[in-house]
Length: 428
Image (cartoon, rainbow, N blue to C red; front, top):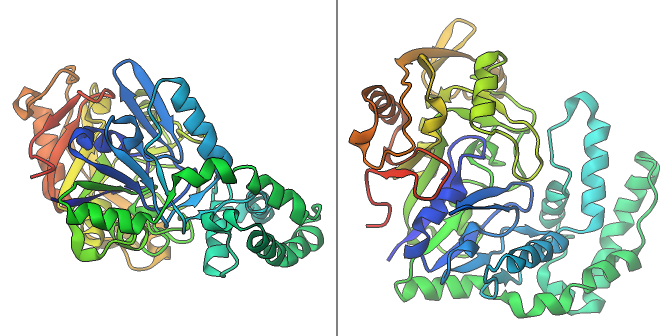
């Protein structure tokens, strides 16, 4: 049975957690394959709302084995705070597995993230300051700390010493901050070692065996396509591969094992942090979307930038990820609008672009070309079949589907797990 990848089709916050939860009872493993605690999922179960930052959202579904794989960077304090909080609410967290090869976010990563961002001034990227970028940089520079290093104090100390040799010069001489001691970092990390030990596994082996046995494995991407370090709006991106290809490198399964790629897109668009955003709204329409959709970051609380649906971005995401199915979320947020614009192309200095411009500069200056669709006023939260939707809402979905490059299989009509319309089965 399948390996399924879920990715965001826009700039994140599209509702991937809800899509994962929708599949949960038919899934055996849920794998977080990239990112860290810099992006959150909000999942509503009955009357309970859960905000997850580092843990895969499948941890909320009984029977599912949640996995943090090698492509993730792990803040151990956040990990155990989340586990403790969920346990206190009666959630079984005992099945969690963590890759021995995942990298660890240390206190010096968090410090460097914050001071570097402040140092950039007007050129800030919009990082969350949680140490994600510096941890990935150390991984690529081969001076990172891995989960397995916590179980050998000598190795851990050597690695921390090597990392701080350079970083303390940077902190003291460039950023005018105090140096960080090796002992304080090592002691901080070692306090988690024994709690961590029972969770650690060769997760690549576990996942490949699960697929061999016909288990359903869901790979849950953090962030989204337009934040992918290679394929997003660089440099205003995250530090990992949030696209479907990242599921293979970030978990240790082969690309040919992936059966289906599900991309999540809101019925409009949002973005957090700096960077180009062609359909961004600065008027009452933008405030309407922010208020009606409660567009504030799960992890940061920051207000999200809001804009109309951008079809060229969806087509780009479909192409880059090999999307087989879209899940269109938050259609209900558009209720009450008289007219709903959709970006179908861009104008760059008088030249029409039906696809994303190659040049980042061109994309930064792109102006949306809109087609408008009739709005609706009826409450759609009770719709459970496509025909239950008002005609205008059906027309909007069909138009967006035609423009986006893959079928829309699921439509979200409210925040609850049951508030969905399933047009096509996501596991067949």
